[in-house]
Structures are given as structure tokens and as C-alpha cells.
Image (tube, rainbow, N blue to C red):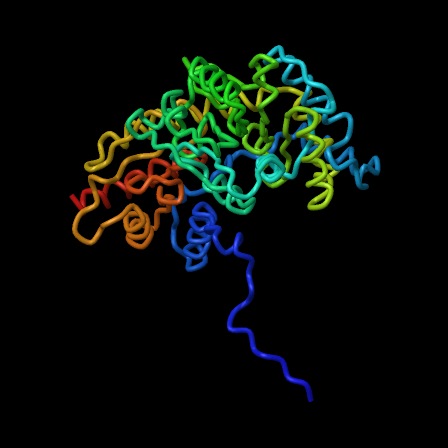
Length: 400
């Protein structure tokens, strides 16, 4: 009988082997494991709204199902959802896009993935400001690119054009921006965004602008989209958008991209050979989300505003913790280095011990490129926030 040599390990590709597991997924799994034991968990790890999808959107999905809109669609989406996205950006930002420049994706993450893998060649460098969303560098690694990180702590985690210029090399191909930011909640000022785009356009560098939290900006801040930039700069720009946060549609997996026609064609090619179209029913729900009533967005923002204010005030009273004020999204990103004493050496130790001792979940900042920080999501009830902050304060006082 013919025998085959045993494999010492499964032959995973080098690119995938170099990728790191998601810190946000790890926090979610830790919370679920603890809940399974019957523990009363305060979970600040989740990056999704605690609100339900608005009824008008769910009803649109039901109508789509009953109308038989359950078949394959074009890889880039049905005409109606593409038109709704274009109309939204014209209405909100006065900008004109063509149908050849828009496509629908299975969540905002796929929009970023499509944009990166269609642009990079092996060895191309991608500028990524710290702290960053955990997935950005891993997509770059998957695409055989080289992540180049830009330190921004000295400017309060707000990128500026001078930092970008210092990081550019002859190998720089792409810059990834995320404003409002996950994990810091900081917002890149519109004037600085324009200066950065002017610089990189002059240098022939492309930009992916992740605008997943676009609508969640707190007064007196104002919503800004890179879509409002001049046409010359948009020739080097891909916007990655999402329905997940704005309309509490995380599980629907609905995102989109806006980019020059040739870039969009390439992204459609990639998507056509990976997931094909986004969920057909969710596409019709997305049409209603954009074209229907928008009161739910304002209601969520008002609730996040109240939670944010309470949370920031509570954090200021905790010894060893400092936190800059987030202008957008629904995250705080406190500096916990003042608590790193004795057996607590890292922010990972802080998060793990907080989980074990107080059954409270935060996400270690190391996964976002910021050791010494943790991410706290306030996309949870005020009751949970108040109880969780009580536990964090008790924990911090123990180690101070």
C-alpha cells in the first residue's frame, strides 16, 4: 500500500501566516466565553450599535423578499442602490459621481479590501497612521505590501500633513485614512484633510478614506467626507462606506465604495471572483436606508452624545487613566499607562486582569498599534456604562 509522508503542519501561505488575528474579535470571544460561565459581564468591546435596525429598513427587506428579489445581482450591486448612494452624496456633499464609480460590497471591510488588493504590488508601501483599525495592516500584508506606520501620539492621535510628508518614500503607493477614527474617535479636521490630499495627489499617491463612522460627529464638529474634494484629488481617492454603524445594520453586511471608474472596474473584477454581489435583499434595505426617513440617525447620535459626556467625566475621576476627547464614532481610547505597575506590565495585562477580576471587557490598544491604551466602546446602554466604569475605577484604584 502506498504511504504518504505526514505533514508537520498545515502549509498555510506566507502572506496569511504573517497576518495577525483580530484584537476586536478576540475581545468579543472573551466576552462570550465569560458569559457562558454565567458571569455578569460589562462588555465595552463591541464595535457595533446596540440599537435595532429601524423598522422601515426591515420592512423594505421583507417587501424585497416577497417580490422575489432573492436572486444574484450584478457584482457591483443593483442599479437602485448605486443610484441611492450617488444621490446621498450629491444631497449631503454636493458632489457628482457616475454609476461607473460606485459599487456595493459585503460590508465596509470588503470595500477596503478590494481597494487595497487591486492597487498594490509586492513591496509597495502603505502609510497607516497610528492608532489604526486592526484590519488595515493585515489587508496590506495579505496583498504583499509593506505597512509603514505614522506615529501621531504627539498630536493627540490627529494626523497632520507634516507627518505624512516625513513618511513618504519612493515606494509609497497608498495612504489609508479613517475619520472619525476607530479606535480613538478623533476626527481629522477638514482643512488638514485637504492639505494631506493636495500633498499625496501631487506625489502620485492614492488614498483610501474609510468613512464608516461618517455621520457620527459630535457638535460643534461637522460631518466631512472626502467626496467633497475637487475632482483632481478624487482621481486618487477611494471612499469606503458602510451602512453598519449609521443604520445599525452590522449583520446585514452592506458597504460600498466610490472611486474612479478604472479602479472600480478592477474592484468589481476582484469581487466577482470572491463574494460576487452583496446580499440581494440587503441591497433593497440599503435603498430604503438612504432614501427613507433619517430620524433614527439623529436619535442614535443624541444618545451617543449623552453616553460620551458621562463616560468622559467618569474617566477623569479614575486614577492612572487619561483620555483625549473623541469628536466622533462611539469609542474612547484612554491611556492606562498610569496603572501599569507591579504585575501589570502592558495594556494587554490591564485588559486581561480587568476581565478576570471585574468581568469587564475592553480591547487592548496593542492591536491598534498603541500599547498602553485600551478601547472602550460606548455603543451599549447607559446602565452598562455606569456599572462598567464603577468596576474600572475599583480596578484602577487597586493598582494605584
